[in-house]
Image (cartoon, rainbow, N blue to C red; front, side):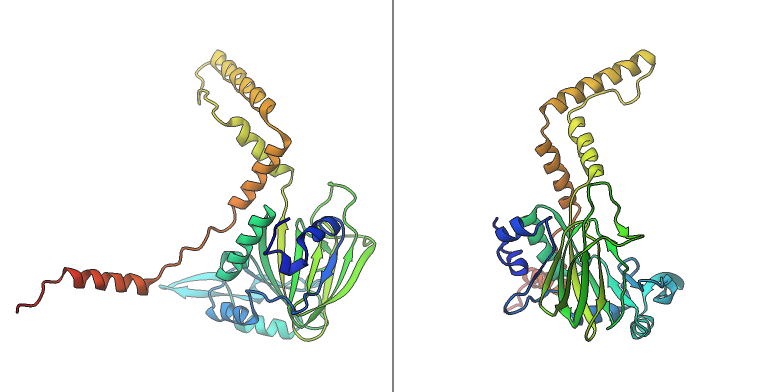
Length: 317
């Protein structure tokens, strides 16, 4: 398994694949500690702009949900009010009161994180997304829950105590809060800055801030589900289908249905399970943010000035 981007997170990628991936949780402690492209300074900068909107930001408590008005405020633009923007003052007060700050999909708005995840997604051939959690010491932002993704957690600051519980027995499970009796605990650990925790898809887990202000980056590695497979099946079997869009009478409707079934039967015969999985995973990858194409107005202005100067007549001698 050639995965140079994954290696700093989990050590030997081949050993990770055979020992941990989808089998059991694990903790990885790189000798020099792993550094993140997203830092506490980036959290400060994002909040300081005042332009980070919902749903990219949320404040949460495990047993005491917070309404959006407690951490969001409107902004006035051109005489109109627009709601849903992160309010730095409200967020600071809620953090001081023990709430957790969640910042979603960093890969959509933080360039260095987007670049990292593009490489990691290409290596794993699965869509990878990024989230950041800021949790005060002794508090819990999210109750015991299951994620519909494999998760790599990188501790950025402070420490956090984690409990990981058994995964589901089969594919009939739901993501989100675990109700009733908790599953058996399979791992208990405290993660410190530079250390990594891997949680397999569906394994229940919960965490409490330990020492200092706990900040961690969560990379969610998304796997396809039956809905993705069904959509891919539709797309693959519909390729090159040429049937009248609006048949005019009963006979034409039946003829269209017959032609459609014949086409699908032929397409399915040539389709392998591997083809279907590959197509569905490629669809997930295609939905990730596109590579950056930054605008440089300074460069554009310089080019315009150069062009104007080149077109100016030479001074008379």
